[in-house]
Length: 415
Image 1 (spheres, rainbow, N blue to C red):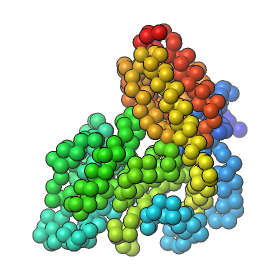
Image 2: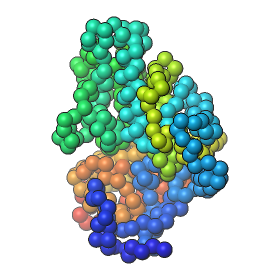
Image 3: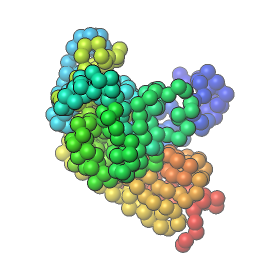
Image 4: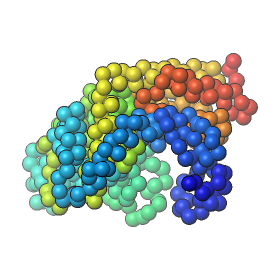
């Protein structure tokens, strides 16, 4: 029985206040929709920040949870379990990588990738030059990351991120992350040094407002890493698992990294993440890496079910089709209301508003029954479920249009 009454935020006083939340308390989700405690329904274009790849409470996930929960919850990370072995095999077969480490969060996966790259650098790297540098007292450990990047909220991944103001939150900051500018190869060369061991980036910077890397830039980074004996790491916590219209974001670009991190959509709503590595850089030794819930069979069973659905014939084609519908609708909205740029791919999109009123637009959308995200004060982000219907996409676009027609929306009257 629910004991909280709707719209009484003072009853949430026992939760640490770490983010601004509306007063609504949500109690049920199904497919594209969420219901609050007052019984009001919302079209959800947040989906847990791209976590619910198949929407809320899909049968394929609830069935996997129920079946696995009657067999084995967790034996211990010191023992093998069948779902983790099957999931590792499936991920490697689908991605072309060789080995996998499982975690619970994207930040955990990204920290695992950072640790793996540093260990790789200390054990000789691709051509043995790393070992010589280490013996000379100048070991390579720096990872080039990018301004406005977001890699997670633990100390290492916050240092790797390029989010404004984070460098002052929890000093002293972890060293070893030189910052470059997305799509600016010269900026990468300026921070490249003998201490560099890897380059790490999101193919699309989600938290920065869905800002994609260009194909030419990622190809240039791949060539640079090959020439200099560096690792290329893609953070696909948000862009992986079908979000860009391909199973993995690197397939959308045709550029394969050495290390790939996954999260969010991999679990379809449960805590699940992974570090995928090619054989030449899979250098962890016993005791180097681990975690209480690493390869938890309950979570792995869910991820197997998610991948089974994403791998169905025509599933990704439908993601691309709905993505095109959303893109075209946003472009029309932008033109009709005098808004700004539309950016993205698959079912990850952003709309520039032209003014810093995104929070007000988010509130107005919520009042009209649509949940969206203000990625930046001037920018909305949209992350609907991957199996969205054409009607759901049109419903969301209609609500956005209605909100932009309201006085004070910030839209420029260009009609």
